[in-house]
Image (cartoon, rainbow over all chains, first blue to last red; front, side, top):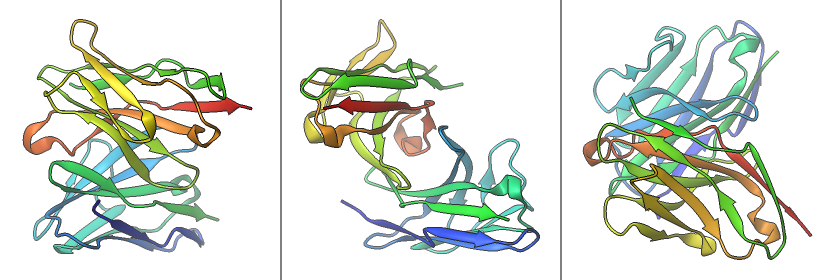
Length: 113
Length: 115
């Protein structure tokens, strides 16, 4: 199946700094990618839809200025958590679709200290 | 609005026993339905999906699920549990069509397999 690679798998940052997470479709082009957030022992919550060449579409309650999404190419979408705070600590997962199926990255564990 | 309810945050079975994970959905349009498995600190792997074809869907690793419109259910089953099946399982729904990959997830069920 198609492969989606997410990097880094783990990151620890200081409060107030920004962190960038990359999501790459390795063997296919993805005009649309999705970013999810997962709290411990909870489900995945869709944060935003990333569209290549245009602005991302954010779900209700997700701060656009806090979670910056850039989808500059057909194989790469990035999520930048700006001015991170401890409450932003979470597991972030991206997905890309091909053949009407979503393929997920391996996730990024963000810890803000 | 679409939603998914997974009954039971934890399910514990003995190795070799039947696995039954429950999922009920709510959708105003014919849904696409999915089951995913997640191992610790990893992404999600698709087990199977229903996209309005056969109501009994067979997936990987011996899992299958049956779409029952009258019950708005899509329960996941496996005849005989294996230790390697221990993981978190998520049921998800989408509107289908061009939105088939924008998913709404249930709260998840952790499957524990006892030796």
